[in-house]
Image (cartoon, rainbow, N blue to C red; front, side, top):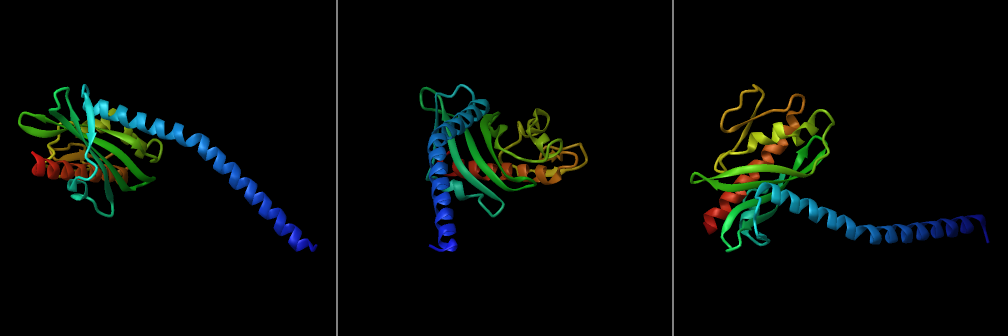
Length: 200
């Protein structure tokens, strides 16, 4: 048997064993990872619309595609309901594809306030921006800017530090991240408006 054949067989066996090992590790870790993701999602829901008896996902609703484009994907729409089944609020999960460090996935909550549907907050499910810059998006100071904003508005980013009703203050040194998050919220706004327009 030539050295080339021996080398080929050896490489094949190494590849086969490595593949089987990776498959075994994936099988062991898949379920715990899925459970952790589900728990993180449920915690986000509860922080945005607390006290709901159930969170009902509207998987086939046409409003999911109302705001989808190349930069933002609307992943899901959830209606939070009380024990009687009445709507308490809405949660839209969106992914921005224009973050500085890659995709940013987040949930955006909405509830009625004084006759308007307003933002109850945002919660990040996945964000990997630059530490000390873009990661400042995941601070209460930044996230609180969205609370109370009307879902009927499309928000813009300002660098003045003096944001108006339809503006968001940019994170210093992280305008790309700020814009990515704001675009995601705008997509969520359009989604919830489309849902309410069809079902309200």
